[in-house]
Amino acid sequence: MMAKKTKMYKGGIDVGGKKAKYCRMRLAEPSKFDPRSFRVKKIKEGVRLIVGCPKGKYCESCKRFAKCKVGLRAQSLLKAKKAGFCPVFRAERVYKDVY
Image 1 (cartoon, rainbow, N blue to C red):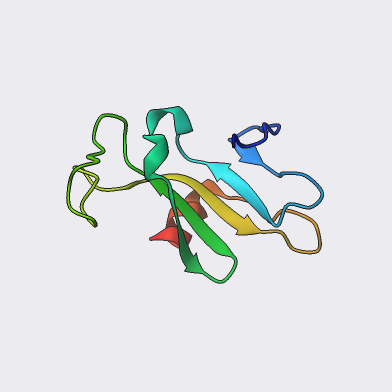
Image 2: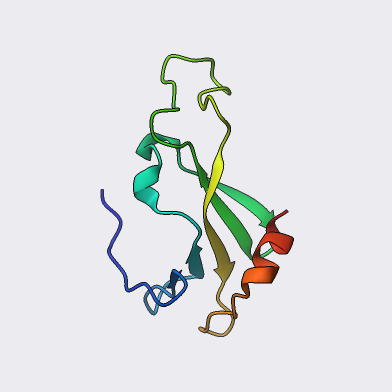
């Protein structure tokens, strides 16, 4: 099942539909990642990070927990909507919240 296309705003921000629980800030194009490698990591309450393995670096036959040869990379940052609105994303704060 393919993800529904949504409008991307300036800076790679996607607010989703009315029923969406999260706003997404795209950090890298999803086409640069192997589609089998995407994972969602919970950073803290209301903040999640989508990570993936770059194309050509995913090893299907490798050990269970070491399938990405170069380590996972951040693809998107998700923040929970508050009262139906997206919190403001500030570029200088994105990496401080994540790392």
